[in-house]
Length: 271
Length: 248
Image 1 (tube, one colour):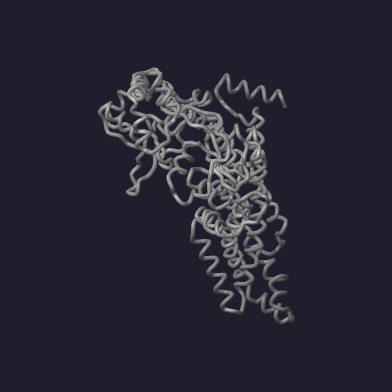
Image 2 (cartoon, each protein chain N blue to C red):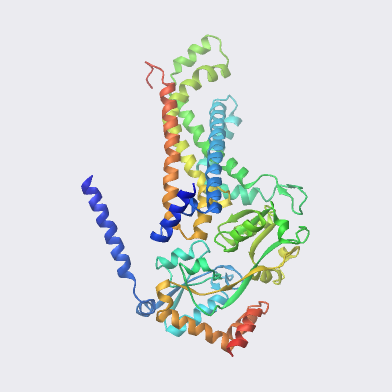
C-alpha cells in the first residue's frame, strides 16, 4: 500500500513537471511545426460553417487564413464548441480560438483575450412570429432552447427565469426549436440575423421578437501565458490592422452580414 | 452552512480548487436538480424495464408464432443498436412528428417531453436486455417442475406467475443486477437531449465556471456512490430471496 502511494505521488509529480516543461512560446512552436492549429466554429454561418463539400469556411476562417499566412505556416482548423474550446486551448490541442467567443471577465481568468476585439454581438431569442413574446419577462417559465457554454445562459435564467433546455451544439437546439420543443432559441443575435436574412424558407415564420441585450465583444483567445508574449502581440497587431484598413468591414460585406456598428466605430477610431 | 460555503470559497481563491456547487447558490440548485433528475429517471427506467422484461419473457413462451416473432424483433432491434442513437431517434425523429397540444403559447407543448423520451427510450433498451436475462432464467427452471404444475391443473399463466417466474427471477438476479447497474450509468446519455440530469447539470456548471477537473471528480464520486447504493440494495434483495437448500 505504502509503495503504491509512493508510486502514485511520483507519477503525479512527474506529470506536473512535464506540464510546466511543455510551456514554451507558442509562436516559436508553431513556426517549428510549420502548422498553426486554430479552433473554429463549424455550425455558425457565416462566421464558421461547412460548405457543401464539407470544407469549413466563413469570416473567422478568413481571419485564421490571414494569421497563418502572416506567420508563414499551414493552417489546421479544428471545430470547437463553446463547451470544449477552453479545455482544447489549455491542453495545447489548439493554439488559438477564433470561434465567436464573447470576451467576459470570467473567461479572462482562464483565457488570454486578444485586444482589440474583432466583433461584437448581443443576445436575443429566435421564435415563431406568432409566439406572443414581446419582452424578456415573457420568457418566464417557458421552455427556451439554448446551447451549452454560452455566457448569457446563466444571466438570462437568473433574470427572467425561463426553463432553459440546453443542447450540446447549435444544430440540436435548432432542431428542437423547429420541432416545437421550445418557444424560442436563446443565442447570439448575429447568428439569427444571418439566418433570417438568408432567405431560407424554414425561417420564413420566425423572428427575433425581443430587443437584443447585453452586448458582448468577441475576441481571439490564446493561452494566458501567450497574451503578453510574441504570439499575443502579433495577433493584437493584426486585429488592429484589420480594423484600421477596413478589412473586417469588407469581409463582413462579402459574407453578407449586416453592417455592425461596432466595426464601423472601431474603424473610425483607429483610422 | 455559510461556514462550509466560506471554506469552499477560500479553497477556490487560495488553491484554485473551484467547487462552486458548495458556495454558489445557482450552481448548487442546478446540481441538486441534477441528482434528483438522475434518481427519478433511474427509478422510472428500472421499474419500466423490469415490467417490459417480465412481459417479454412471458410472451416469448406464447403459443402464437406472431407474438413470439414480435418479441424477438423488439429484443433484436433494441439490443443491437446503440442506446444513444435510439435516444436521438426517439427525440428528434419521432418526437418531431407527434402533434403538440396547445398551452396558450404559439407552438404548443410537445406531447412527450425530453424527460419522457429518455424514460421511454432507456426503458425499451434495458427492457430488451431484461427479456433475454429472464428468458435464460426461465430456461434454467427444471422441466419437471413445470410438468408437475401442469399435472396439478394450473393454467399457463398460473404456472408462470406462481412457479416458473419466482424461480427464474432468483436465477436471473446476478445478470439482472448487472443490467440495472448499466442502466443507471446509461441515464447519462439523456444529456444529449438536454434532460437536466447529473451530467447535464455538471456540464452546465463547468462550461460557465471553468471547473472541469473539479466537476469530473465530483461526478465520478457521485456516480460511484449512486451505483454502490444500487449494488448494495440488489445484494440485499438477493440474500432476502434466497431459498435455503435450493441451489441454482
